[in-house]
Length: 127
View (cartoon, rainbow, N blue to C red):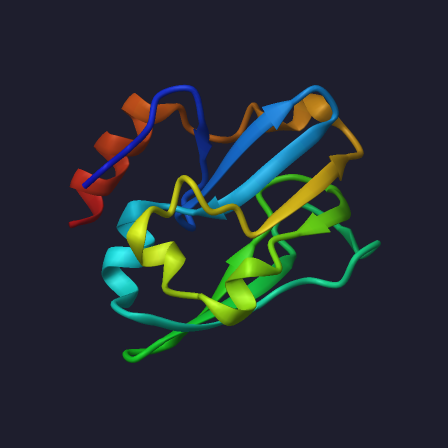
């Protein structure tokens, strides 16, 4: 299982990369591996306001459909349209393919998220 240093992780297996007031959000390697071959991604609408824990989108695989939750509060400023035609990119490299970029409403709200070491331990305990 691949976990990148420098990102924050949620218990729902989303990753977040904060750059200034913007946050890139995607699913983790653990999530894509658990789902199997991803066949569809439902992206959020631009301008959608999200609170921490709200459904950001949906990822569907040959096994199941899974909600993607927003690890932070913010407004959707960009979506990764490439995933509409090529959802399998999330299987190929889930850390290179973000799902959405949020304009953060409170950049200090990442304190409840895990760093890479904590996330690795979390996944081992969950197995």
